[in-house]
Image (cartoon, rainbow, N blue to C red; front, side):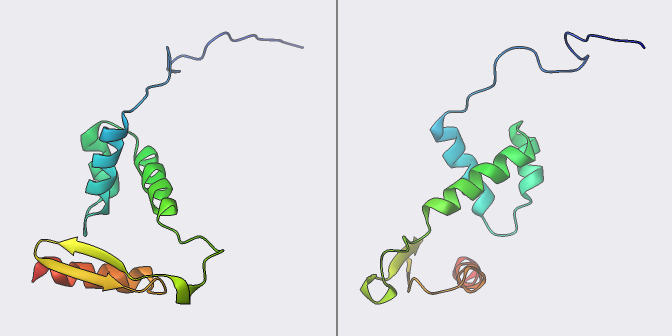
Length: 108
């Protein structure tokens, strides 16, 4: 029987975990939410892991979810301002439909 004890693997990270400021995260997520953006390429340009940026984006999208305790009839429409345009959408609109609307307004 051979027993090997490894203290540290070569190539393993050394030191503490990196911490990102909320402002940087917000800017990165905003850039990742733009239409037709390759999130993996954006993450590499920013010097972070693509999975990290996908995680930040997923966490941000969770904050936009409507609480289940509120009924749809009691919710006011959400307003999205893009330039001079104001888009008002009801809470029951699907993500794909909303993305199409935003793309149409941005290209107009």
